[in-house]
Image (cartoon, rainbow, N blue to C red; front, side, top):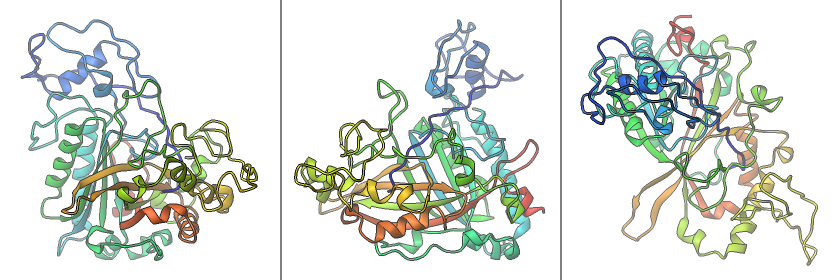
Length: 432
């Protein structure tokens, strides 16, 4: 779990009412569509800050109830990059991989991506699914919903597009900490869903699954969560299930080299990956009983940071640069040589950097009382051979955290750039 943080940016804006939207009487939302409720926020002059929170409301029109700031947050489907990469962490997430069905090829894949893109665009705007909407999210706004699509290594062989398969999509090497379940790894197609409302996220998952029809079948699916926006008095770096502040050194969009590290340049080959990124997905189980048996000082030595503030053990606050040369009263390094935060520093890995955007997960408690819980690790980079791989190799050779985690599933996916207006995701690959 390399030691890096995420942006809190939310995209502002919300659509207005359309003819046919049903609006009930004040205080009664039983007959109100998602679009109508969202339109209330847009029509009343809702202003969204950098974190997507409501700055202020004008009076709501009679017969409608204003959305809260969480419900009104909206990300854009169309753009240079796909949504779900640079947005802030979301409260609820679903990851799902599909394999193309027997006999399905390039034509069926194109039709599927066209359906998925149309559904994603509508749901992210707070509208109902194009067909067969379940009504699960009827009362909610978009809740910062994002839906992101990627292609796995096997997709290209199944669609006859082997020559368009990027070299960066070659399988990841084996790592000593891997205990991978192949049935929960890889896949022809990958979809990441995130939202700040659990019902909105589930609604999107169900719509995407239904849209797959006979063209693709689910290979695996995982559910995750994060702290709900607004649950802390001020914006804070997330904590993981070990209680550690997790993500302090994440690249930020304001960094001069952010795009170069995270996104594929427009001049790169294959051309269809321009402005895209590569997602490494790992299900990392945390051995919480073992971890929680450690003293606080031992936990902090494993990570290299204070548990309460996230400050490096060399001193300062969370954002203070780590002083790797500082020693304690005994002459020992203040930050242990095998501390997780020391090993994952970009300057200790040839400048390797990746944008981490994970979810925590909990899949129940075993008969022995052991929780099946940990991190759905998702990281984004322009090239996994210069991002994830060198860092994970370094961790493999002596990370103190390795005793307390186990990598149980893995996937690598090529995520093309965003769809322009009138396009669907992957169109330049499938129709190029």
